[in-house]
Structure formats: structure tokens, C-alpha cells
Image (tube, rainbow, N blue to C red):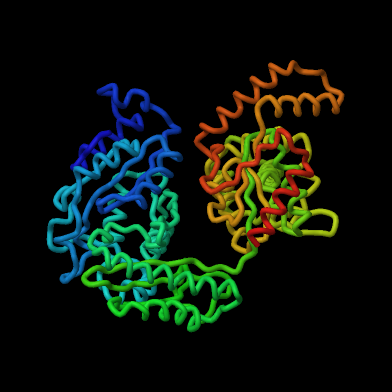
Length: 520
């Protein structure tokens, strides 16, 4: 693990790693000239804890290089806030990162990062996003956050940047910033990590006395009461907010700063929850300011099924969708539809910029019918046309293009906003729908998948392939699928693994339907 405090050193390391400069040491040798190298960034202010660890672990799973930045940002602290006493624990943080297998810590000073003069250039988020929640009592805070995060994104140029959902307003503003500035970075939101009591992990928790820690649980208790009311059908903002306040009022020492219900994307205040809402709190215990939140949504559940090739995902997903009356979101058909459009348009298969233009302007729809689901692209029904040999021969080349993948994932996520879908893939539960209500990792042993494949070939009247040869081919594909740069095969931490060796298709479908009904 490397520790850098200057911009020059960080840039030098990253340039060497990406193969932009001649190699100068063994540390970067294995990374040189690797076009598939991905960088994950975890911005922090130090005093690292289990919440940060969850971000680092996800970044580690999804990237070749993980950079953790540690910078107590003076631009985001007001005159009477805790900048001077904010915990600075670089020695402990270095050990923490070393144990978490971080590649680089970047811990600059204000001078190193270029904000030591009186009027540094600042990034100004939309005023509408800074008129609610924390902005009211912390004027200038999010301008400071946005400025430093933009600097870090420019310096590291990561493929992905990881932020916790506990700082929900910060997350929404950064997502907007990245979108508005057209930064080629994926912002990855990560779930709140809580103590067994429900208290959200925070660097500021160490300010709390034992008595205050026990009192601080009222934040989560209040949110839980509101969530319970929401699940019982309550949708009005005033009633959900009052459910939180009732719990906070039971702790006289706690001074509520705000309880607000807003749109989680735009942060616009809501009178009631139509489809989704963010219920957020800020309160003080003594001199310690604490924040917490929960997300409320009315969408139907999403069932995300991942797993290795040959585990029977496609067959199972169609049957589960039929049994539950949900839409089977056929992601493979989306790639086939685009391939058909490329071929029809006369665009060369390797003309990635032109294909990026085409996919960015296309509209894909699924239309449920009593006996089937039709797929339309730009209003034209291509359900049958996308099954031709010509499309089949070219779809892999189209699907491998990064711009295609990015746009179609975004379209899949738009379908997911309404919920009520069943979908399968290699990274559906980890990347496309990390917030899916039910995640299944459907798998089978290499030996069982080889046996099934051999039987399929036999049923098709094709020449029988040696079982050991099939096992080797499947094992090789598993290795490639799990190490690929785009959509790698991974099991989500909260996925339920179904080992299907001893199960029939009917058994698997019934199990997933039961799991869905238990959670509905």
C-alpha cells in the first residue's frame, strides 16, 4: 500500500499504473499497459470505521486499484463547527486501509490540493438542492463538499466513486454534479452500516458519551416507526414526520434540527410519497450533530437473479415471472434489439462511436400480452426479427462495447423504477439493481452444468461431447466471466444462494416464489 500527500506523486502513480508513462519500478509492472484496469475511489475525511470499510470492500471487489482519500475539508465547515476537533487518526487509518487491501491512500494538505488561498474556485450545486435539510443550518457546506469532491474526481479520474447513503443530501448533490458536468464516472451509493442497536456508524459517534450513545438510538427508532407506518399504508408527509418526532421527543437531551421528507433524487420536499421518498433527520446531542435517513418506496418488488452460465437462469426467470404475474425483463433481448437496429441501419459492427450515437437515441419497450411479451425498438415490434442467425452472430460484439452496456443498463434501471420485474444476468443484483428486494444467486456445480449441457446437445441430436471436456470449458468460462471488466459475475452480499444440483426446475421456481411471497 502506498501513501501519497502530493498531487504530483498521486498522478505519477496513476499514470504509471495506467501505462501512460514508462515503467520505473516493479510495483506497477503488472498494471502497465492494461486497458481493462479500473480505479475505484473512496473519498473520506478519515477516522475510518465499519461504514467506510463497507465502501472499501465493494470498491475492492469491483476494481483493480482502490484509492482512499483522507482529507478533512475546511471548505465544508462553518465558523462555529468542529473543524479543529474533528478526529484526525492517520496512523490508525493507514493500518485500517492496509488490512482492507487498499492500494493507495491520498492524504493531502489544503496547500497540496490547492485551496490554501482566500478565494479558491468553487463548484456551486443547484440552489434548489441547498435549500433543504442540512443546508439550512450549514450555509456553504455543500459548496465546499462539491468543490473538493470535484477536485478528487479530476485528480484520480476513477471509473467508480463510492459514497454512503447516510449522507443522503451529499450523495444526491454529487450524483447531480457528475451528471451535470458530464463526468465519465459511476457514482456508487452504498447502504448505511449500523451498530446492532440501529445507530448509524459515523466518525462523530466517538464524541458521544455512553449515555449519549444510548440516547442517539432514538433517531433510528423514530425512522423505524415511520417506516412501519408507511408499510401499513401511511403516505402523508406530516404523519410520517410526526412518527419520527414522537420518538425524538422521548429524549429531552436531543435537540431536533430537522425532520424532512424529500424526493431522494432532486431533494424537493414532498407532501406525500407517490412512488419514493427520503425521510431524513438531523439532531444534536450535546455538541455532537448526528444525521440519519431511510428510503421509502411504493414500487413493486424487483427479483434479481444472478449466477454462472448453465445454471438455468433464463428458464427459471421466465417461469418465476409467470408465476408471480411480473414482467420478465429480458436484458438479452435488449442487446439483440439494438444489434438488429445496428444491422438495419447499415452501421459497421466495429464503429463504436456511431453505435454509441445509435443506442443513446433508441427507445426499447416491453409489452406484456396474455401469451407472450413483445419487444419494441423505436416503436417497431422486433420480437421475431431479433432471433435470426445474423443477429445471433453479431450480438456478442455489440454487447461488449462499453457505451452500449452503459446506456442499456440505464434503460434497465428506468424499468426498475416502477418495480414488478424479474431479471437475470451476471451482475444484475450487484450493479444494475443493487436495491432489489429479492436477490438470488442461482448456481450449480461445474459437473452438474456439464451434465446438463451434454444432455441438451444429445436432445438436439448433436454430436456428443466428452463430459470432461465440457467441464473444462465451463470452468474456463466461469473464470473469464468472474474476471471480466464489464459486468463481471459476482454474488451480491445480500443474495440468497440456491445450489440447484439436487433440484428440479419446478423446485427452484417454487423456492423463489416462496421467498418472494415471504418478503412481499
